[in-house]
Structures are given as C-alpha cells and as structure tokens.
Image 1 (spheres, rainbow, N blue to C red):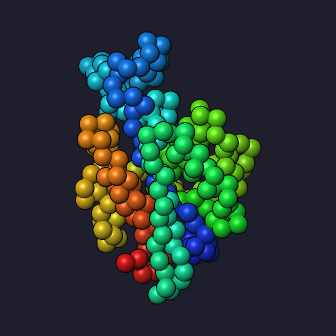
Image 2: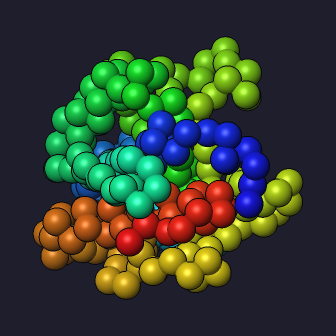
Length: 235
C-alpha cells in the first residue's frame, strides 16, 4: 500500500474523468484563421505525410484550444467499511459553457467543506489543465481547486493515478486500462475507448453512451486508489 494515500480520508476525494471532442465536426468548419493556427500548432506532431485536415479528427479533441468538453463525471466513496457506496454524477451536454459552469458551481459549493482533493488519471497533464483552459475561454470563474496560480506544488489539491504509478520515472506512461487489468479491476473500456468518442458523438449522436463510458473511467480511478490503500474494492 502507499501510506500517503491512507492518510487522506477517502470520502473527501472527488474522482473525475472528462470526455472531449473536436470543437467542430470537421476541419473545414473552422475559420481560415483557426485552420492556420491548427496547422501551425500540429505540424511537428503530424509529420510531412499527414495533412492538418486529416489530423483534425484524430487530435483536435485533446487540444484545449481546438476541442470542447462534452462530459465531466464526478464520483466519491460514501461511508466506510461494508457500508461504502459509490456515488457518481455527470455533467454533460452539447453546450460546453453550461457543462463547465455546472461543474464549477459544484466545486464552489463543495470545496473544501466536503471534498479536499481532486483525483484523475493523467489529470496533471490533461483533465485539470484542459478544464481550466476551457473555463477561461468561456469566462467561467475558476474554482479554487483548479486555480493553481501562485500555489506551491504541495498546495495544489490534486492526485493523479498515472503520476503515483510512475514513482519518479518521468518517461513512464501507463494507461488506465492496463492498470485496471493489473489490479483485477473490471475494464472501463468494454464498450468504447477514448479514440472512438469523437465518432460516437458526431456520427452516432450518442452522448448517453459517452457518459456511461466516462462514469466507468471515473470509478476505475477510484478503484485504483482503493487497491493501493490495501482495501477491498468496491462492488
């Protein structure tokens, strides 16, 4: 077990996962100016053989400047011992500003009186900065747990299961799916995975399916922390 994790009351940790897609369905729907900016930003990632248009659906969703948040799932463990329950709530929709505002309002209301930590897989490099950037773009006031300006590293109330698993190995990248398999946790990828979200959203118009997937990921993050605390997994 990781002793640091056991010192934190589990019911004060808010676990989360987000799902993002390209801001518009196709590259040609961007303004000429934004097409040029996307081309400039991704040219070193694409290489010479892949056009910006081809690369758009593959990567625009993970770039906060060109993507949008369509689902934020939040969960926490209620109770202790055999009385523990998993509770989850999702904010989702096509209007990104509304999704972000609802999530921000929840954080304003519940930090730090109920929750004292946010936890996500790869949250340091993706979920937390992505949410913060999109909130700024939409003029949504940053809740305190996402407002890192001027804070020392140990003052930032974030856990990241990927970072915890690295144990200082900066080059290591381990997927949530692999960690779940290692610790006997049911895979959250039994229907779709992140690479399919944009297609499910824009071509199948099935936001509910994406929400279910996002909620599975959120619970899996919680299960990892529970496993690393040396405690029985949730049902």
